[in-house]
Amino acid sequence: MNKFNRRSFIKKSGLSAASLYAASNLACSEEFEKSQSGGKYMGDFAAPKLETIRIAVIGVGARGSGHVKQLASIEGTEIVAISDLYEDLVDRSVKACKSQSNVRHQNISRYFGDKNKWKKMLTDVKPDAVFIATNWNNHAKMAIESMNQGAHAFVEVPIAVTIEEMWEIVNSSEKTQKHCMMMENVNYGREELFYLNLCRKGVIGDLLHAEAAYIHELRFQMEEQERGTGSWRTHHYANRNGNLYPTHGLGPVAQYMNLGRGEDQFSSIVSFSSPAKGRKLYAEKNYSKEHKWNALNYNGGDINTSIIKTNLGRTIMVQWDETSPRPYSRLNLIQGTKGTLAGYPTRVALEGGVHGETKDHHSWSEGEGLKSLYDKYEHPMYKRLGALAKKMGGHGGMDFMMLYRIVECLRKGEALDQNVYEGCLWSAVSPLSEASVSQGGMPQKFPDFTRGAWSQTEPLTIIS
Image (cartoon, rainbow, N blue to C red; front, side, top):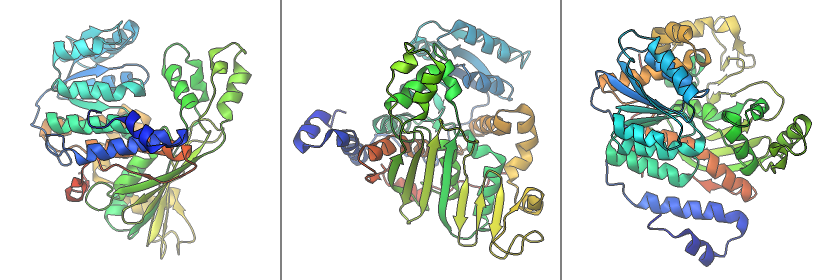
């Protein structure tokens, strides 16, 4: 923040406490947007080909351990180093990698026991690519340092937690000419790829509205008290009030709409949270009065609902709820002038009906009734990789397909399916929703991380 003094801005503006965070972040973002990184635009960037990708991994807990094992199974990879706070987790993943190949992954450097060992790993090993699956607060600094050390960075969701961090990631990627991709695995789900193809083919006409969500009751993670996801994620629930995890639902619908890719862009967001009840009640029911979870003030509403407006006037409803007792859903709804696609369960309604199944748009075609549409519009990449991905697993195969595509693009020297600006744009919903909630639902403007270049960026093609 060399060009912008938060304290001076706050003092001069005389803003209320509830508005300080939003106002300072807005001014900060505007300063970044006016400046230049000194590098080159990364929207359609394709890195030089890598015949063999030397990979290092930071964080091999619940998420990272799955990534490293699957990466080790893909031709053209060599796992050269693994870092984690805990030696047993490193050893577990080293063993899993070696089991995947008798030739590759036999000389894996191990780093553990200190929170900064990952930095030493980067300078010692000089990997081609780094995969990061750690506490959200570490994502930005680890991605930036990885790029500065000459590696492409692949980061678990969200890519960062503040707007300032997102700008620093963008600037670092442009300066170093290294990829920084947020690994949004849901974009590789069968339903999501199917809907993307239907949208590209114009089956539902001009796109008007979308609904995205992450509804997933995860209170059980509070049992992870000393290490594991719940040990750090619980504090986010207590200290923040907004949509903390927007990208699983939002990523696919953003790509349906070509947002940030030549057609349209996010403009503003309004956001509201429900009362915060569920986490406090869960802690009181399951832990002693003296337990650390009962010492927290749970400020984050149980469910957050946000509405995004795009430059073209389209709307996207985004919801987040990891507390309430209800079935899992990402909604995954996209509505156009000729029909609507919806998830949970997979359903299609078309004006004039789905041939041979429904007579008009007043009835959904679902289940076996979708066979004819799948036969005609199954995404070609899913046709090629779906069976293998399903066999390899990871959220029904979407994890494997995502990792396979990353490796494939790096080896072929092709642009990735998700660029750095998309990762920042989708992740920006979190801090902007927090700002809107704190101001009673006041609209918040999205930063343009591309500095206007999104209008020249090619839409994501239907990859075969």
